[in-house]
Image (cartoon, rainbow, N blue to C red; front, side):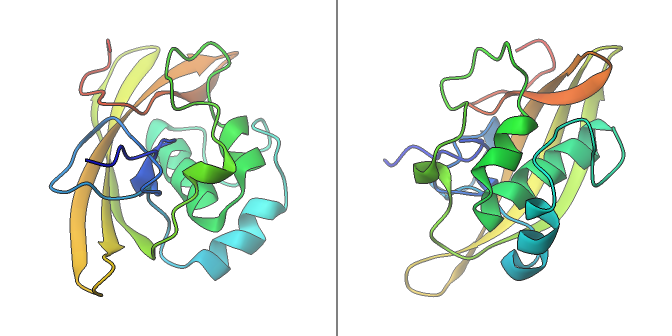
Length: 161
């Protein structure tokens, strides 16, 4: 079984490469947003975690992380990772970038406390034979200096993981 590096940095990450905190129906790669072309422009505008393209909410940060992975913007994805993450899939590397087409179908906060959250990222990943596979990855986030950051993306299922 190939370990997803999605969140490996998510993979739904996007990448097959994202071994995200997730409940997955397949050994899918990491995730991406709806189109890599759209996100490439957005993701490359800045790599600074503090100047977010979106709101500073757990779901927005999880989406931005996957969009960066899908677009191949490793610098941006790593800027969204918590600096003290215990995850073996972070920081993200070029190998974490999905090679298959990945789309983000939805992002939902499933659990949240004052400084931690669990977010489900629903993805569709094109398989080698062209058949789409759907998977949901659960990503753990924690705050750092008041900003939400990716804490875990490797088999995380609760906010306290």
